[in-house]
Length: 310
Length: 237
Ligand SMILES: Nc1ncnc2c1ncn2[C@@H]1O[C@H](COP(=O)(O)OP(=O)(O)OP(=O)(O)O)[C@@H](O)[C@H]1O
Ligand SMILES: [Mg+2]
Figure 1 (tube, rainbow over the protein chains, first blue to last red):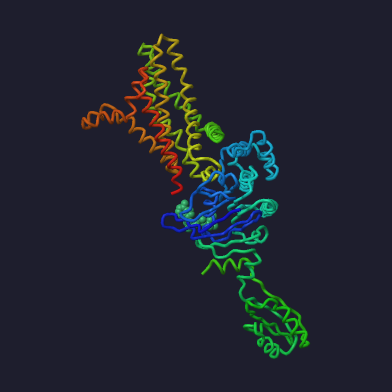
Figure 2: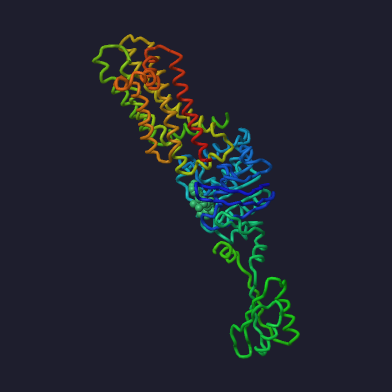
């Protein structure tokens, strides 16, 4: 649905995006991660035809952003960063304005606007000036505006920033719901949000793509060596020798000791797929009492930190 | 067309939701009426010559105040990003905004019709110069508008837009005035006279419709609208 190839964008001498390529399939929800100034917003502005790239191409639903920007814009619903809105318009007149510019047939306009009012729970604030709305309601108006023409593609730049936890959950639910039939790119700084809503993640840092995959894939790939904690009731020295002799154990150390019980910390190399099962087998064979067996996996936060700090 | 109409409607309404518009209209009406009636009854002449002659100077402040926010505010608030990612062509937005400001100017001019009505009531005026005067003022005001809109699209600061528009409009106004023409080399005189608003304005307000004057105003307006489109595109550089 969206094909980004070798995208590069310079602002004067600043290079905001450097040779980024990725694609988003139909019906996929793509999470866009990266620290401040990574180039997320810039990439989105290019995909939505706000400004052209310095180099590279983007195709949206088969249309090139440079050759046919109007049809690209028609396919996309866009929620820009910080949700800019006309603060002197009422919610109702604003939605009608967008519907009109989007060339929604006058016959269907009423119905589309009403549906958005319902989806985004805007009934109570219809006659209010947008400038007088709370942040959360502005965000909803921004979402309503982005979805009014029922686009196939939604591009949302930090859709949950500045919302309270209830609203965050509500918006996430909405995105998840929409993601069933629409293609969505969303950027965020909240990592659990990615696991909660996205099918796939790409991480960019300093304008460059540093990782891409499903949240699980990223966790596994970036994990590298995993850490296993196990507590065994047996002769600590012997246990340690046995564990160390395993090919995939890089290091085995005693964490703590309590009577006969000892807690070990094992560093496993990347190429072993089922280290905990193997450890369990060994313990059973040797008749050791196993009271803990726990494999630590890296959280998305850890991966993010690992990939974006050098 | 749909897009132009939608933008025109939105922009035109937005003039009237802010109190600034009413303040502007009020000041405009008071100033134009006062400057006129101030001398009218002393003059004992049923003509609007003085009223028309002062409009360019009133427009000099009035029009930049109308145009200053049109683009600058969009840039400042970031709504530009919203607007220019809708399926619109750059020129459609430029035309929509221009037409809205033109309508606003037209409304303001229509509100001064009390003046010719008074003149007609108190005397027996020659209607040619009055109609010519209104047409000339409308053309000149529209030229100021095109210029002001272009300057507003160059900055995100409304005050800067106001002051720059005022200065540049002022330049176009005085460049063809006699005291400037005396000071420059002879061979430059026809050029300055042609570029300046003055000569064209005066001939139209005499009630003489010369195609050269119309061409001047229309190309002036077209030129600055074109620059406006280019300035909007410039975000792409
Ligand atoms: N209009 C601009 N002019 C010059 N430089 C810019 C402009 N917009 C962005 N940049 C620069 O481009 C880089 C990428 O910015 P961008 O806004 O895309 O980052 P981001 O990933 O969206 O960051 P954030 O998470 O803070 O929103 C930054 O170094 C920024 O300073
Ligand atoms: Mg951003």
